[in-house]
Image (tube, rainbow, N blue to C red; front, side, top):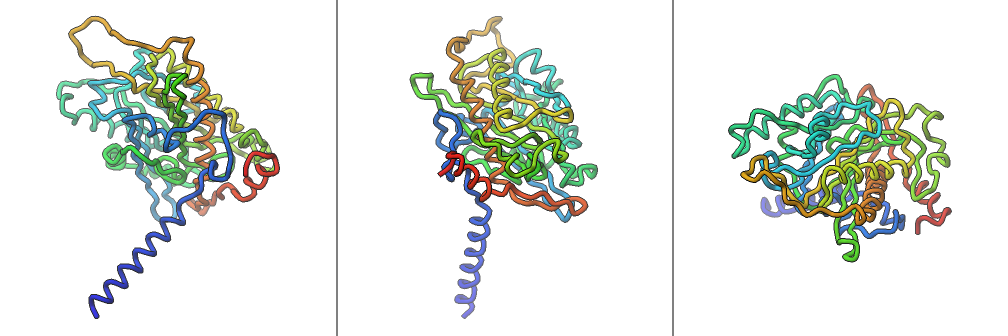
Length: 375
């Protein structure tokens, strides 16, 4: 009887777990027949379609008022400080607290994981990344670390003044980073965010160029927390739903991270980042006065050694004339990643009982069907 009881309990528990898990899985826009652009996606339609890229997320969802977290993006599996990645940052609107910008701008390299969190947790996240970097084998003599930490303000749902993100949360996000599927919506740095007046969050997407255009992959990951007039596949959804900036008080920020395996230097990565910002514009974002909108672009195609006996870099880089398909890929992937974040996000109640509703997906899909943009 004991064995039978335990077996039934185990099966029941398993069914409950499976049911809860299935209930939390949202259909992505493409599953409704919504198409974005003309280029094919990667296998997962995620930033992790770029070979070697890993993402780790820690969600801090506690009690009635803590809705925040950390998202870590890691370009390659080696020592990031000793083997730096070419990188660039584009500032669409600079009302933000991104750390590490000036050195990336000056030297064109990334030497740490990219961390996303909330506004007031940037300093502790940077401190954690310093700990992580100094502790890595081979970095025993390191005396300077340029951490790259971005943020959006999740104070609508999160007790942001409480500064509940800890160094351990950041270190755990880095340690748990993995390839494969990337969770979207109310997770990691997107736990407490708001987008176009609805629940925002983490979103990701990718594009895979055909062999005739180089066969490169471009992946985007976004932390959506901004306003404007929502558009999906060119349809003015925000107008139809009566929810948009200046009709309601909608403001905020968006962090965009774009990775590619195309061999680009910092100059062309900056150009790629500018195009990702165009993807935000296609969703109806307006980069308002109070919005911190940044794009961090990184190439995984090669590494730049921290120290070398050679006085020269010998690199094989993609020519300007061959970069336009990557521009389109960045636009499309960023646009879709933003919409993916909205479709995955769920209604959330947080600090001071404030509730942010999820996007009314059935209404949205119906509007898109009427416009011929969904099945």
